[in-house]
Amino acid sequence: LKTTYDVVIIGSGGAGLTAAIQAHELGLKPVILEKMPKIGGNTTRASSGMNAAETNVQLHHHIVDSFGDFYDETLKGGGNLNNQALLKFFTEHSALAIDWLADHGIELDDLTITGGMSVMRTHRPSSMAPIGGFLVTELLKQVAAAKLPLFTDIKVDQLVQTDGKITGVKATTANGAVTINAGAVLLATGGFGANKALLGKYRDDLKNYQTTNQPGATGDGILLAEAVGAKVVDMDQVQVHPTVQQDTDHAYLIGEAVRGEGAILVDQQGKRFVNELDTRKNVTAAIDQLGGTGAYLIFDRGIRDRVKAVEFYDHIGLVKTGADLAALATEAGLDADTLTQTVADWNQAVANHADTAFKRTTGMDRDIAKGPFYAIHIAPAVHYTMGGVGINPATQVLDKQDQPINGLFAAGEVVGGLHGNNRIGGNSIAETVIFGRQAGQQMFKYLQ
Ligand code: ADP
Image (cartoon, rainbow, N blue to C red; front, side, top):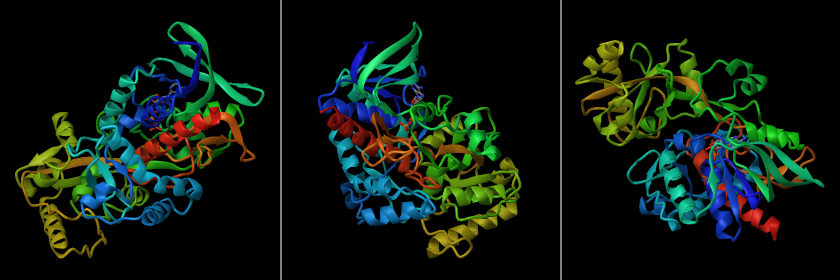
């Protein structure tokens, strides 16, 4: 670890890694500091994919999409509360981010769909591996090839500000405290879903919820920025993920991909109760209304084959299996006749392309007919914090008068505003790559 770099990047998730690579390619010397022993942050836990519109990948799949639709649907999903300047930048740079990844040998050439989107714009690797682990592994190859310094177990505790400019950080290492000087600092520290005190401060109702987040998601970047006068926005906007398996001490985010490929959700009796691909907020509300029992994802072999992660969940005992639906119902504690009828009705809806019961219109290309059949018990858990530091589309952190704080940049989940009151699945990975690239470019420009 040296005492001076061009830029200090705090956090080794998708945003930090992307920004480091981009900054390096423009000739800067970045360092990445990660407080945890493990690299990759919450990014490694992302499952569905990366949203983007107007991509060549979509055209290869005969999907004609537009930035405008991507914008409108994200705004609608976010309750019209999204920061529109950030959203505009985000949607209009989404295809470029997919291209940039492809230029680096990181191909996301398969497509799926997530709740709230009208077309397949969630890009993922053709191996159908969960996006997060794949992306971090691939970005780390680039970091290694460029010999970029990346240190784990170094926690940034404070930003150094001189004459109104951020000029470095103070951090704690295994060997004690250090000060690192830099021309610019990027907060890529992720959200605060694992910080019960901070959650409780803004959302008392959620402080006892389990979380899907890694333990390091404690909102450090928000506190660091506030200490130098940054404004924070939307801090009470917390996404509760509707479909989290939480019967063991680890909360596993399971449902998104399985729902997108055609799984249905049923209650304790075995009845459907919601459009499974409605927004996360609405699906969560519907599950909460069941009265604390949680719900069950129901799917078949065909759907399972499209979602690799299920194999892992099965391996660790979280998936119930039955040769037929009645056997599955018994295994999962549901009513056999009801479940059988529910699935028959659903298969009819798929055949008719019309879900008269709940008006689902997406993720219904496959019926649930090919045994064995599967069930996963799920319930809502804290998943994503939409709030965070205020930035402009140049990723500059803003003070309370909306003026940039010189030398301080932020990208990724630490930022507030892009998602409004509800983040769409596939938009967080997109945010890390799109704004990570932008941060790398803007820090370069700032340092010219
Ligand atoms: P994003 O998706 O926005 O890139 P992630 O959650 O994937 O966010 O990554 C953020 C990373 O930042 C995590 O690995 C987290 O442990 C790390 N981090 C958070 N606070 C600090 C800190 N104070 N010092 C160093 N690293 C931090």
